[in-house]
Image (cartoon, rainbow, N blue to C red; front, side):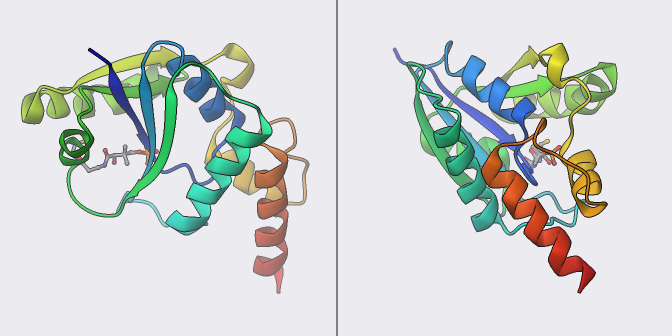
Amino acid sequence: MSTIAVYPGSFDPITLGHLDIISRAALVVDELHVVVVHNPSKTPRFSSAERVELIRASIAEHGIHNKAKLVVDTLDSGLLVNYCRMVGASVLVKGFRSNVDLDYELPMAQVNRDLAGVETIFIPANPEHGHVSSSLVKQVADLEGSVTKYVSHAVARALASSAANRKK
Ligand code: PNS
């Protein structure tokens, strides 16, 4: 039986830390859905369609072609477990950088298991990316710093143009 997994998040925008989790998760599952989920507690910089495009461009740029089939999708409303049910996924993938991430993620993992028996697999961040977050890269780009160590070229270009538009 094949294992279908979902890696959800805001991905606003995708960072090299997220790409590392995608590439490692793709080694242990057969099909991985990277899903841009609307999080009502955040005001996104990029639209869901832009975030999907940036994820696709970043995956292509970094040549992630592990054994799993990769699908990039959006979930604009409704429960994540309903999306899992729809695509036949039994597993959620989450990356964590520190106990702060785990404190945030643990209740969500428990609720998703209560709701639908969907298990969450946590993948520890590569220490190289332990300090990288979407919010920090947006801040650095807005202040005209270099983000090329943290994101793909496609995302760096999108951040530079969004920073320039915000200054107008
Ligand atoms: O990258 P983020 O913003 O921390 O991701 C959080 C996200 C989008 C994965 C989380 O908010 C989520 O799962 N939202 C979907 C709504 C849902 O199913 N909520 C109940 C279980 S947590």
